[in-house]
Length: 314
Image 1 (cartoon, rainbow, N blue to C red):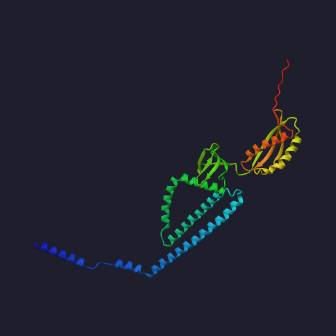
Image 2 (image 1 turned 180 degrees about the vertical axis):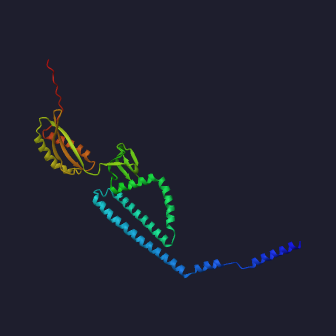
């Protein structure tokens, strides 16, 4: 009984002595010494200063590169494109896209450089970001394909808003009509019957653009088989020379090609016109009426098909 009491008293005295002993604050003193170290703050100050320098220099480089892109690319596009007023939106989209790419890449380099300055393991961070980006890329690969295709459509000026195009994919026609919208991800084409085709750019295979170059059109009409072709040519030559410049859609003086064929007792005569893109149909409609009236006023009638019947003699 007495032994247990003595043991308990000894344990209590040891606990009191342990509580009364001062706490070891050596690690706090170590932290305080490091925090108040002049070399530490000089080192941090140098790294912050270098980071500020990197940011300023990076912003200047990004600004200069963006200005060079705007001046050089816009000037080159104006020289290559005769429809600059029509393509201003496309040109601005292309320049803005390139400038945004330069800005994002520039800031990425600046951030990586600053992290390296502070001895932060950039490789580990990039590895984690790469895995996340890979997962997102698999889910959005169609979107990425659409945007990349749209970028090259704009860069190569394959077609523009207002152009008349035919879009095919794997040999089949996807849409044909007038382009009413051109974006990075998709394009919209208005068909003949006012149907609107909304096409992801990634599905665009081959493009036939009817609005790129001037159109060559042939106007055919028929003359009687016994018509004086030389006289007809003199009349048409004078008429076309005096009137072709009145139509702003005709680019060059029309050319008299001549007699092309004999069809049903008639002479098939041909005139060649060079017109602005997609304006040949209206020019043909106008000149069919004008030529018919002019020839009729000069005593020349157009040909009428003739059919010969052979009677069998018994």
